[in-house]
Image (cartoon, rainbow, N blue to C red; front, side, top):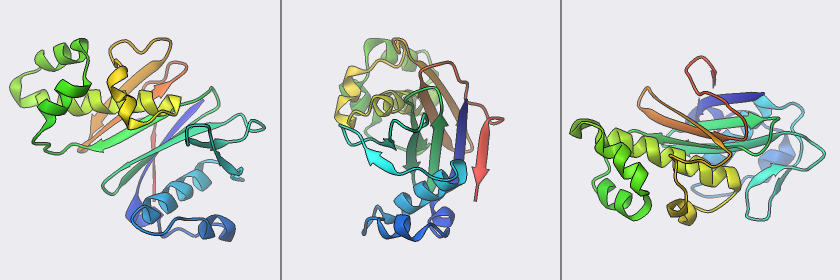
Length: 192
């Protein structure tokens, strides 16, 4: 079972959380996204088990709870993927101009990913960049890696993992799962 949630940080960060959870929120620029993510988790999983950090810093539940999750945010948008089938990764990006996207793709994309972009009409290549970027990020996040490892992942050959992506309403969204799951507007639950 997979469940995918989308919401807005500006709304979800105002939700009432259990006091112990709210008190552990970081201060500074990450606070709103952190609070929104915990509000989504409280919506999706009740009661919310304690969250621990894995070896590489990926948040998760302890082994007594056969649930896995991953959060991602971009701008005011936040996504949560919850699974009872194993580790998952998700990434969300606002479709937006990125003046240096070709240089970034040259530094981080594989040959097959470049071929995917080149198959697109010129006016759709930036959108293809975001589609590939979110797939690669979802793969990294599924394994609990860091963004610096993105260059070693090929989203055209996920190796025993399943990738799915969707571009909708100005967003690019990708998930990486251990078993097949297809992202579509029908499986997304809007929260807040």
